[in-house]
Image (cartoon, rainbow, N blue to C red):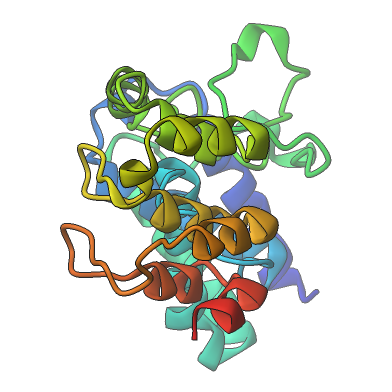
Length: 243
């Protein structure tokens, strides 16, 4: 790393440390928080996210995955220059909300081994150590907790859908023996049991639902079939079953 790039990385780490305790970070919009997240991950990894895109039933990880992928797509064509541009964009956002470019944490390193998706107390961290999956500090990237609680309440009224989500094959069999017509029933979001099973990658359960007569062409509220959800989530084996 050149001296210029090295200094830029130190400033980037200082900005990250400042953001980790800045009250003004709490007022950032969700879009800006996600942009910071994506920039931070791209700069440190010099690559995009690995693995499949998270399920639509995991909205916060999915949003973070997309944010990281978006920054990688934006800056990676420029190679090393792109990484530097991403650093500068990250620091520019920090300056917009009050960072003055200083930071006594410059000589410390970011702890890339301790990935965490929850807020943390700076008082409990070693000086200069920030968790790599929480680059904007005590502000949690996820803003979906209320939605997830609501989803949990809704699901309690759909025992078949709950059993499918948990990959509870005996439970699904018992519920469908009691009410076979429920196999194509929709929950509050328009998802059938087959939608849920396909999206979550439950191969054996998907086979069972198909054997019991699940309609693979039925659509949800976004006009997506179980096959479409499987393709989006990268469930190749289930894609093969549904084609």
